[in-house]
Length: 348
Ligand code: MRU
Image (cartoon, rainbow, N blue to C red; front, side, top):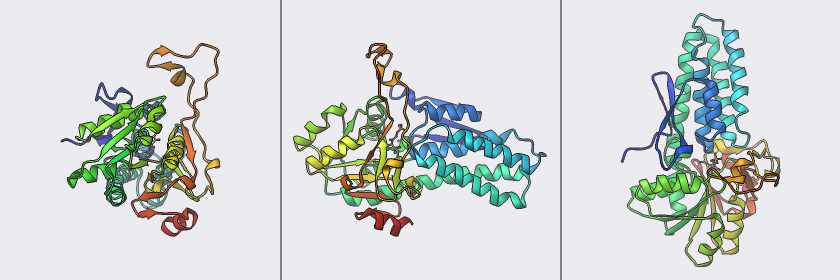
């Protein structure tokens, strides 16, 4: 089956899958300006921590495309900096966004010393393509490492979407499930619906069923029942930011799922690339949590469900404390508690 290209660079433009239209409509969107990329990230047309990092790197290429080849390098660097700040303002929680912008910035600073503006524009594109290709390899390795943890299980629960559509391919939390399938092992997956924007129902179930993996969508409030009935052997989720002590920010509702898993004695795993770790923060309470607009909660796909004037609380992410996490799967290996020591040892 043809793989889905979450983000693609062709003919000097970026193409993304418009994830707000899934699963009804698998449609592609051409991004021609940095403003369009900013909006695409903000509106979750492209989403998932690694994918928004890759998208931002290409956003910079698009932004600098029209800068005159004969222009001064200083002006180029000033405009680049402005666009980095602009894209960094699109979403606050997933650290991969800032990681990718910083990587391109450092790359350009290094290369700029011995090349022309025309050359640096081309090299920037090569660097963005390298970020995409590395993500593909990284996620595959996460899948191979995660498969070791899950291979004696048969039924997995996941929250939100940390699959191929949240990365360049394979995903993080879903990668072990895809690797298993390649090896002839078929897991059954429970996909939490993931209110308010239904990434589990709309995106996880879409990509898993497309890959021939048996998937059952449940409303978020059904997770306790499927666990109590013994239908879940393990939980695996992705991450938007992991601090030095292992506290993990992920889609709102993840913390509740981790508590339920503990109550039912079910192992709770996190899968993420090393670019999702923010070792500058000691613990999760310092992670900036994106607050999204009222309409996402107060209406359900076009129909108003909360009376006007009633307050709504809509954080996009929550933080799962490290003590609820059994292991964190990365491309560099599996990290077990004590996390502070072991994260530093592997990634520090
Ligand atoms: O708001 P979203 O859809 O970007 O949130 C995505 C998640 O929370 C994912 O679980 C996380 O980014 C990991 S993606 C590999």
